[in-house]
Structures are given as C-alpha cells and as structure tokens.
Length: 192
Image (tube, rainbow, N blue to C red; front, side):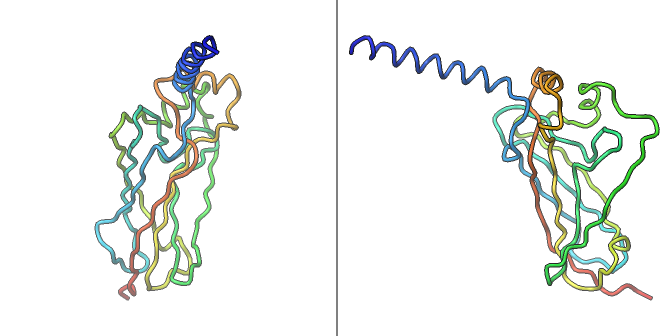
C-alpha cells in the first residue's frame, strides 16, 4: 500500500506535465477564447444607405492566439466575417458571395496564414470596419432591424495532417468555431 501512495503523486505529476506539454502543442482553440463585438456610430439610417459596422475581436484567453482576418487567403476566398439583417418578424436577409481565382493562392499553409491570420496576445484586440449596403439586401423596408455578424474560425478538418503539424509549430493556436454579436438599427424612409 505504501508503494501505491508513492506512485500516485509521481503518476499525477507525470500526467500534469504531459498534459501541459500537449496543451502547448495545440494547433486550434475554441472560439470561447475570444470576444467579438460590433457597433455603429448611429442607430438610424435612411433605407438605401450604406451602414458602416465596426468590429472588435479581443483575445480573452491567457495565451497568444491567431484570429482570422475578414477573408480567407484561399482560392476561391471565403469570408471569415459575415453580416446580415433580421427584420421584426424574424426574417433574415443574407447575401451570398462569389469569387474567382486569377493568380492562385498562397502555396504553403504558412504563406496562407501570414495573409489570413493576426496574432493577438492576451488582452490585445483587432479592430476593423465593413460596409453593409442596404440596397443590396432586397426588400429592406423602413423599420427596426437587427444587424447580426459572425466571425468564423478555421475548420481543423480542412487541413491535412502535415498542415496541422506545421500550424502547431507556430507561435500560437488558431481559432475554431464561431463568435457572433448583433445590434439594433432603424431604417427610415429614403428622401425622394
């Protein structure tokens, strides 16, 4: 029994050290390590106007991590950041997207991430803005809407084993999953 008592602390210590080493090698972390907020400078616009939506992504974890820029650096590119409207009845107005591949994309996963990812240390944030042109969302009549936005991270399964191994060697892990936020705005009749 005494040998078992000696083994338990040693075994537990080994497990904790091994877990710590494995945690340092993670290539991906959940989106709960980030906060995501959107805002506008005003709450009312005329129907047909473009709305400037500001966003802030903050690392709320205890370690550095990579967050995505607005678009993938792949060919064709897909958005990491997307926004849409919801009217008072719950109907969603969402645009599609498309792209072409003229010059191709980055050749290696490191080249891709150098264009697509931003490293945030704990407490640091990435701020940006994008335009929502209300004319493009057919059927937006004057009224109250929610602007909903989502930041989507990388999908681990879309990377090869070799690419995941390469990502794990980088300074920090990469966000997976999705974080979202919404704000209320009002569209008023446009001046004719």
